[in-house]
Length: 428
Image (cartoon, rainbow, N blue to C red):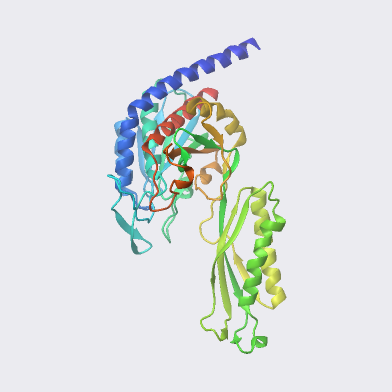
């Protein structure tokens, strides 16, 4: 018991020393982090087109003396910091892509950039905060290089393209990075990621153990019937009425089959297409939508229930139907390993301070960080980017033209990435 107590005191003392050093270094690098953020915000690039962003990041990482690999998953950048001592491999990830959104903010570093999205000319904006993610991870890289003597093991910095989804006909994002071996050579033991949040106060970090962001499973249903004149519906097998029954029945999966007190789930039909005249009952109707789940069992249940209901209703109407799910890109649940969360929660408290660490509600939005967490334990956390004088209900949301986050929120992100790395290495 005595030796364990001495070890605990030693670890606490070491953590305190690191915190002071990290705090000081984060203060020193903050102006540079802000400068980087403004640069990326003013020069955004769409998914799988982050060429200039990647070159900028790679040049800086090389200036730190890191081993840098470019062209991973098309435009991704990966760098390794080797402490020269045995220990775990900790991966830190930031996403780099922007969105086809026109900025309306009157900022000195506002985006005026245009690009091409699925063959169309579009405005481009960092409307989800990925510019801050890049800058925070670059800042953490500088801090950890300066503290190399305190590290045990290796740090892998992952700057990822296409988190928002690759263009039609292309692969991209975390799924492609994993496919190309980003978690190998050296083999990653744990991965940490942050997302800035425009509606959370600066200085605050939010966490959740277990499912924190939903799995995404797009679906398509093709309903085949028999065409007829609209005046003679008895001569048809009506795919419109059949589809209407399917839409209503799909809503009962969440309301009547998913145990909602334990699991969150959403089944939304977002598209119905069929017919071309008012007086013709068509032969076919297509439905498409999205399923969101926060629990693997709920995900399995929804898959089974959708297939059962689609077939049952089609059979009852004399129609046929084909369900395709997933239809297109499908993301797993963003799942924070509970044991890892418990292990690192003291780091969050020490870094953000008393009263600034809050348990988050799960959200039905999605993140492709989940592809890393499928392979290794990982934590995905939310860092506040809302100015303290702005009411939460007045803060612009993500993916909107007036999206805005305060530069001051990035300092906590730099500290968290640095302290999570240092503390995990020590605790391992």
